Amino acid sequence: MGEPRVTIVCCYNDLTQYQAFENSLKGQNTEYTLLGIDNRGQKFSSCAAALNSAAGQIETEYVIYAHQDIALPKPDMLARFAAYLGLLGPEDILGVAGAVWDGSGSAREQTCVLSKVRHGKALAEAGERDYSGTAECETVDECF
Image (cartoon, rainbow, N blue to C red):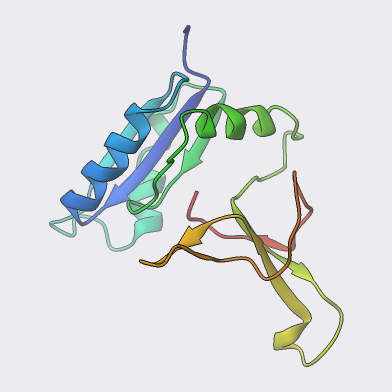
């Protein structure tokens, strides 16, 4: 398959969830490098500090920061995500969920979430508006 273009960095405090994440990645049809940061002993004061500690180890073109409870159920999901990364500019950020301006209602209601992520035991949709492809957002969630 060639050299990986993507490094996935994941800080975890639950080994069972992290192992499920690792197993999900093993089913992907593209190469990747995984940097798991074990924070079960609270070596780092925050997830951000743990993720930043890995910066010097990244040798790939792209980096993905992932939560420990993410699962990629289809074998081409990482490859498709990496393909989207290739479409971005050098200062762009890609995420699987983001907030977009809605322009109606109170200040809190002026944004809505775009996401194809499913969550919870019922695998409910996390997004509030349907879309396909990519969409420009005000902020992105750090889950993946």
